[in-house]
Image 1: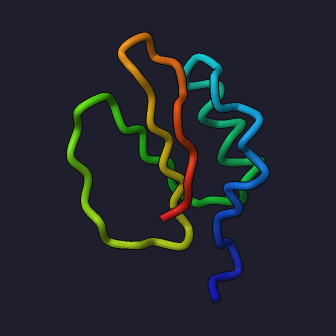
Image 2: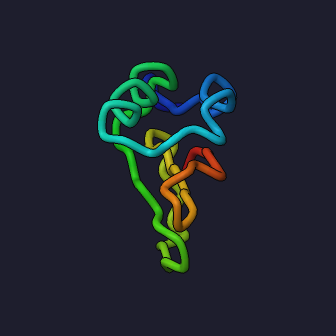
Amino acid sequence: PLASSCKAEAAQAFVGRAATAELGADLLRLTGARTLRWVPPRTAVTMDYRADRLTVSYDDNRIIDRISCG
């Protein structure tokens, strides 16, 4: 496994918070992920799995509704 693999569990408390660049930086530090992928509503994303990537989905009001790795 990658030394810097993502740990999404550490970020679940942020579901329901506003999606901001500052929060994104905090989420990267908190989860140990190397890259962050924001996913706006109704956006298709690739299904390639990357253990070092944090994926943060948000709704039309820019409220985070899902945080996962991959």
